[in-house]
Amino acid sequence: AVAYETLGNFVLDREDARDVALNCFRHALLAYTKEGETKRARALGERILTIAPNDSETAALLVQLAFNDGDFEVANAFFDSVVQSDAAQARKLLIELEPQALKTGNLNELLTWLERLLWQDSASGAVDSRKLMVQKARWLGAIPERVGEAGETWRSLIESYDDAADVA
Image (cartoon, rainbow, N blue to C red; front, side):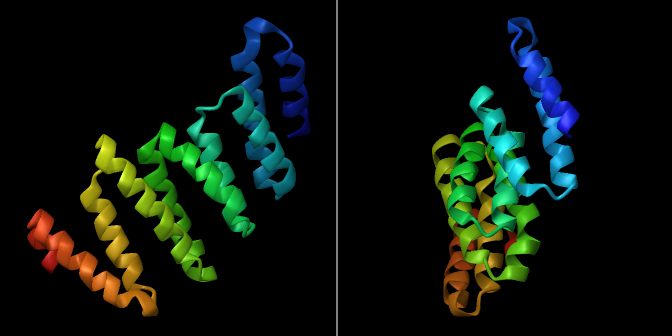
């Protein structure tokens, strides 16, 4: 990991090798993540995003690292970056974070992000809003104090999409 990061720093100074440097940094980021070097991975990921602000994969990895650390403010900021650059990646990220959120009791945080993705989807049409609504209803149903909201969401889903699969 350190070797990739060092190589990336060396190559970055050359104007014609920016992509090579980013590739080295991404390899280092993945290695730091696998090694459990979360702080170093997060710092390098943030550096990558200063060089390539629309890198949704790096932003998604930073969301996962921050979410797993319980740093929801940082995770939230990086989730916004993912949503703005790749809505499909953002939906995939929500699904990947679901088991951790269920285990730690942080499903409400994911619901907030899902609602943001739904709002953006209504403006852009980039993600299937029906799938997002089904996900929202499922997650609301998993939180005892929000079961009533889950019922309303299912009702709205059935009325809006008239899909027999939603009733079953």
